[in-house]
Image 1 (tube, rainbow, N blue to C red):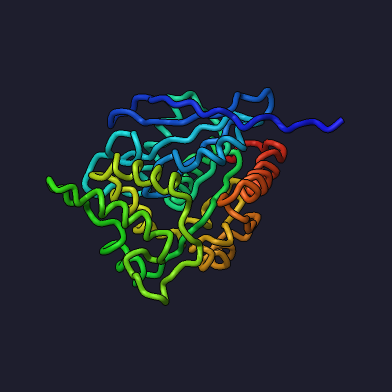
Image 2 (image 1 turned 60 degrees about the vertical axis):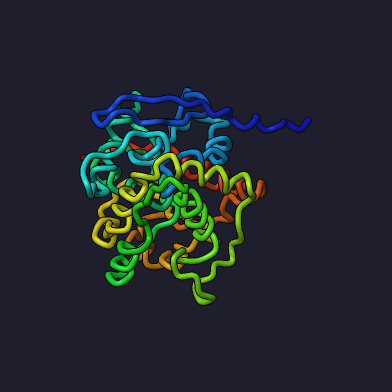
Length: 294
């Protein structure tokens, strides 16, 4: 008899209070008798909405929680004009405290990976296993250019031009890298997501149009070269083959020689999603380690 795999976990939503206001989160699955919950941190400029497919897969066997970074999605804005990655890491830890997550596995994608690095460095006793899914390592020139152009403030007017600008911005991130250099040499070969997925991402950015640049700029400004070697918890250094951050993958491996490298097929199709989730699950299901010394 062939056993059917458990159904994809249902996504539930809620809020917890932090000093800045509230953090919005999504949750899937149930706490397992053995194993730890998985905290997932999303990429910019959207929200944890974009993690729902992976949450549904990984939540088949364990509890998965994904928080909207302050200034993104439905979470409250951050404090200050230029908060850094350490600030956002601390905010996520405070949200974990409110959620009752004392020790957990941790996943971060792009901006979420930068935040996850800082959480793992600052709180190694709370992070069991770490998945970094797409790491950038910008040169000083790249960083300066992107800080100037990549995440501009949104100008609001009564003609609604902000709606069109945000739609084009989100769409063009799939077509060019970086998105504001719309020349053939910067063309990506990824293709656009489906219309419904593109709409969902645009809506998530629109929700936080006033504040989405803040975590984005913090991630761009974050120099990971001196920080990645400080990560002491067991780490899976992953990257989708279609990710623009593939250009930095070998350099990231050199900075984290103890990390397990993994190239994935991403989550762009049901088959790719299932395969990638299975690879992540294999890593997370390895025996729980003793907590490192803080």
